[in-house]
Length: 387
Image 1: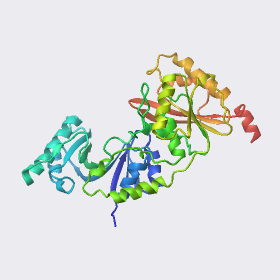
Image 2: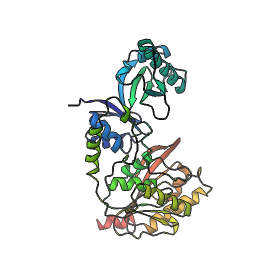
Image 3: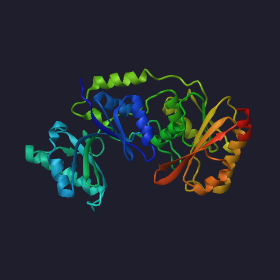
Image 4: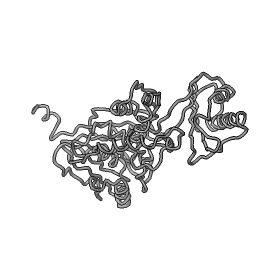
């Protein structure tokens, strides 16, 4: 029977609680939120499941050593003490990535990665008089070194390429939203697939696709062609397919409308292609529509989630643009809940609607707010009188 071990899933700033809840639902044990990461325990099968199913994880790491270090020599010695033949054959290949957040280290992450690589190479040379080779694209073992103040954690990266690379996006527009952030926005909105969903400025369709996968309970990374753990020495292919099949059996159909609008024909074309790539064209409708000229045509409650231009991306008169967003939502989208992410706090004031929630997030390097608007049939005052 496979034993439990500690794992760490990394994520984006502001999505730690969302990732923790995903892990809880999946069945992880001993869940602990950190800064841009969540640690947990599970067995080998759960490591496979986490990679396939998690929507807000960037990568899943398996720590193999944690220790205190104070300089590069301490790091070198710590790595030398690991029995690397347990994880890597002499004929195999490896690569190392590093993240450093410590005043003890003036070296950048690239130098720390090189120093760590030298330690692994020297271990094999000293022990076997031979060494494995480096492969930066598809290594047999991807090693992750994380230094936080005095603590160093050396982990095996089970994901390989970042988990935001779902495998469905072949066409993008200017500054497309990261898939992990898109999924995080949908989950933060509370959308589960039990009502209509609209992205009124859908760009290349990422938010729509992530919403549809949530509604249909489709594993986030089911379209991925490769995970790093598939090259590990203890990889169990039969177990992997058992886990994958169990997740696939939970897929269901969405019976509500999932729609995207964009005023740019090129964006509509790209979004449609990405939806086809994700095999979701049966569930998602993409329409060439200017949101400001649109009205809510679907019956019943609707969740609206969108990522409007921030001013950095498009040449627009920002304050007027955001006023139009507010007017359109207020007059044309009753009985809806609208969520919008933006980095332009000044423009946000021109929406003219009261936010009922504000969540701090990062979109790439931009500090953002993810804000919620409750849109009632008629005025809020009238809504309260009818309750």
